[in-house]
Amino acid sequence: MILKSQVEWALHCCAILAGLPQGRYLSTKALAELHGLPKEYLSKALQSLSQASLVETTLGPSGGYRLARPTSEINFLDIVEAVEGKSRTFTCSNIRANNPCRPKDFCDSKPCSVARVMWQADEAWRNTLKSVSLADLVETLSEDVPADIWKNTFEWVLQRAG
Amino acid sequence: MILKSQVEWALHCCAILAGLPQGRYLSTKALAELHGLPKEYLSKALQSLSQASLVETTLGPSGGYRLARPTSEINFLDIVEAVEGKSRTFTCSNIRANNPCRPKDFCDSKPCSVARVMWQADEAWRNTLKSVSLADLVETLSEDVPADIWKNTFEWVLQRAG
DNA sequence: CTTATTAAGGACAATATATATCCGCAAATG
DNA sequence: CATTTGCGGATATATATTGTCCTTAATAAG
Ligand code: FES
Ligand code: FES
Image (tube, rainbow over the protein chains, first blue to last red):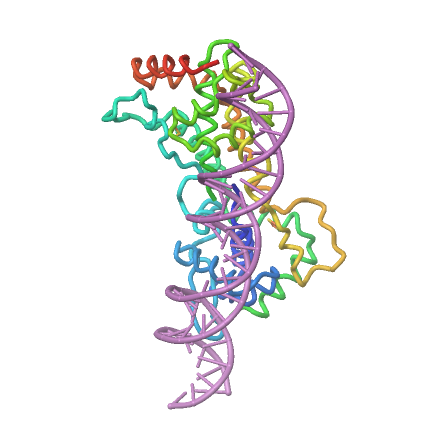
């Protein structure tokens, strides 16, 4: 089990969009070039963000993407779920029902104990992701990334932002 | 991203092995029949458990598997990792290094902030799985599964246990 | 108005992973 | 010896991921 590489892409793109001045857009082309990613395929990830209403788009030259909400109101889980889907990482195929000792018409009242534990772990994962907002990420990044690289990057971005 | 179905299989098989009397073995054939699973493929999952030293095996007629440790000393994470591997669910391909504004010889001192959050969530998932032992599972199961089915199942199992 | 640029999305191909089967080997049992 | 078992390798199939290509409609700039 492994998350799609698009998750890393989407999170980094959102981090860049989070640093964009109010009202400006950034295109797939710029985001792909900045991160060294295949433009067409990155586009699919951005479309997922769009469908999840995390970003807004506009067409034409100087078009592209911007965040649809303040950075404090978008969290990691929003982005991960937009790309990975919202289904749980553990799926129970109800193999307990194959037990030959069970009456054939027996109907379980609860989900299986095994599945409940797995889903509890899934919830812990989700809760952690939910607890970190894009605003938190930008703050951490601006501490971690050397000031000159950070500055140069956003100059580079602003030159290309519509 | 989705866990292999073998995870569900392995957990249920361990739950059965946990109910086995001291020193008895149960074969792949019996475990496959009990859960309605393809014997050959289930065998791969059990081999994973064996390689992780969670179970002991013996060959020949009346051979099969038994737990290698007391049920209180085997947890969900042990079993899940045996089947899924121990690598993290999020892999960072270091796309930040592709930023054209970075000096080419620049070397990051820390893992990326994005990855750190994802790994933190991964840890939360693992910690939850680690906190539930096979002993806990058996206790919950024996409460959830109707007493007669539970009893019949272990009669069925004991008839086949070597 | 015309042209260039953009997001959106459908079709498709390549690759990787998960699922499944089959076979031969060596150990254990009786 | 004959049978049963776990183990590992080889292989096949199905599904998911990754990636490309193309068309369409909207938008901005000249
Ligand atoms: S039957 Fe699916 S987890 Fe128990
Ligand atoms: S570079 Fe991999 S998560 Fe940031």
